[in-house]
Image (cartoon, rainbow, N blue to C red; front, side, top):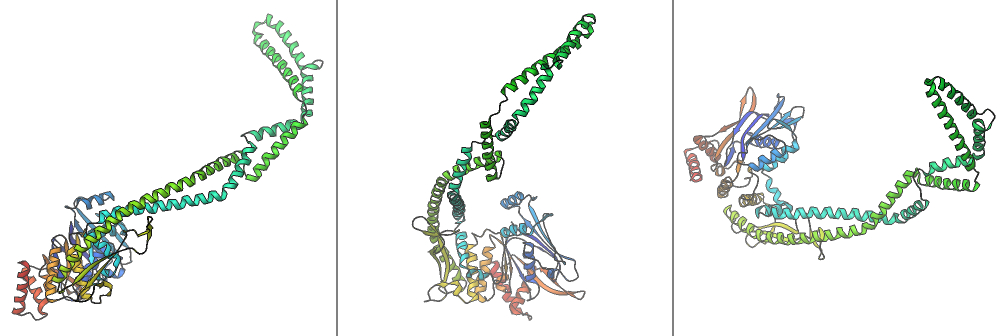
Length: 565
């Protein structure tokens, strides 16, 4: 895959520029201040960099940067976009719009997107190396990543990282389980007392309501008996009682029904009422016999209700809520009994994970030492080509001194393994290798970065590399060697390089010249694709300055010839 086209509108001093790009090495040259680095800023904006309203061209409402990427030979990148819900055919258009008011909008194939997604995509497609990028070599933590990328160790390191995450999860689970055990231990005595008290109370659903009703009856026994007596007297016992009158009516209605049969239903209803009243009287008499005052039972009921009310006050709930609390207490006590077993199981899991980590860690450490020797030789070879006489480049590998202790031996480990990696260099014969941070020369750091880029070219996973004047402090034969290195890297990557060195520009597959011109009284940047003659003139300018002689052109022609040959 590659960046096939870059279109920029109203960005800084750029009014409207379109660059059609191809594979290989593309160089951009021009006078200082012509706007070359503005092109890099535009690409950075396209890849999710922070925007500023000052980047919008004066007088314009908005700036637009568009990049068309050809993914026809990159199925993995297309699948990644499809998994994000983006429509992809074989090309992807990234578009960033920046308004003068500071608002920024992002589009991927016409779909409104987020800056975060744009940045995530861009990180895997384009790497931008500025003229101070070699400063990253001063960060030892970056050295480990470079070594693993070079040696193809990322899959093995991925296994380590997966296990490391598992270990972190298990440790978190142990922490939570131990906290639960401590809490349970602190509250176990209370839970056991509450469980015993509630169990001993023997609460039953509906019991309280039944007892309240029974108490009400026991308190009103005499009143109920008197009422029942009056009812029995009125229905049956008194002269001319209700039952007697109903029976008299029934006898008379029976005689009438013999005369008028249609009165039979009335007779049946009256007879049924008589039977119902007899049953009621029978029931009243039974209740009267059973309705006896029982002071002992009343005391029992009141004592039981008092116990229930006490528990309700203590546990601040109804009987069903107290029974629910009992179930919860029993569950917590059961979990507490299993807590120690859970902790032991998690500790065994932690031990097994640590053992697996140690196994992979040893394998990873051995592989890093082997790869470190290969990287050292490769970088030394490249540094010699870049003008260092007898460089010594050393990949120093030591066990981690700080970190998480693994296993019985307490081996220190971190998220990337058990190793501490640092690059050392001796640029002068007789001097011991020292950490790169102690090397003061920016030119030496630049050459180390370029040597690493050359050696790491096969391991570099990002398809497009953008180099912004990383040739600072380099010249002569070293510059020509650098051009060869960039040309080699460009065989596997699309490389865009801003340079002031003709020894690099002559190796370009595509050559753009950036210049400034006045248009309508305002300065604008202009980008011109150079043909063979244009390249000769531009490289001659880079060699000779403002005055270009036949000798200068001959030198430029010689450089181009050697590069093309």
